[in-house]
Image (cartoon, rainbow, N blue to C red; front, side):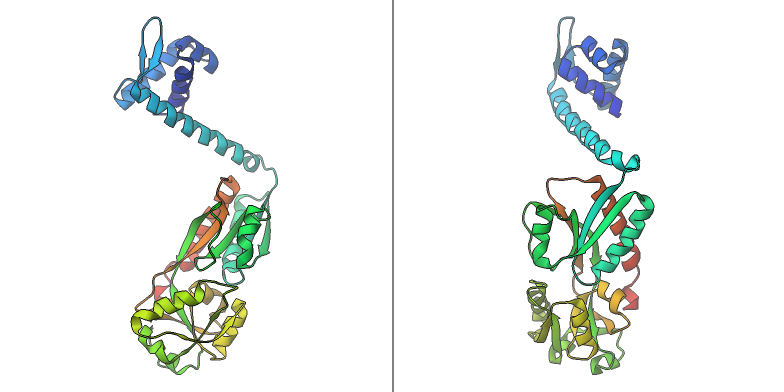
Length: 307
């Protein structure tokens, strides 16, 4: 089945006349008949009933007509969205990100996008978690990179998973638990540790997630302080005010400041999402998703033994 077959079939299905379909397509009538025959042979059944006086759709023909219209409509939309990029016209992509290590991944993906679509102008904006929904629905931003632990967003938004991040323990270099130089730290060993983390304003789900992770090991984490920013949080860990359980992306940005150790057993990974408006399918955003996923794959691949 080829696109030309679908276009010819749709024309015949709408005109219910081979001659008029040929005129509409700008091809000879025998070519229309031949393409319909090729399509029916390829599918293994009749799509049209025809005699000398009329043409009608079979049940299979009616089903194919609906599907073909959808396919051709999506193709036309894609062509329209791609046209500015292919023609080299400048477009603007407005991207948001939360404070923290996701901004580094975002910047690497922007550099990749600049190579693939040099006429695209990218504007980056750091946003708070409570601003994401309104910034997207209000069209201030086209997409926002956000970790799984962000607040729930309005149903008018959709998300694409960029990567799965391992969950690691951030711990001060001089912490006695770290000095044991274990390859992985048992979850149960965290029972006596103080914890630091994010405030509810920055990450509404963070504390409840940590509590649930610790519950199977018979203890409730003791949070001594929470913070608004990633920098404040890591400084607290570095000064041994407490340990923090964080996605692996933090290791790439803050690995020189604190140790990042694997946990045993290892928690389920956390997703990193790119949020966008539900009703739109932007070719530019989809291209950026490809860039993000490529950069994320390079960043997180093969890091399990390095933690």
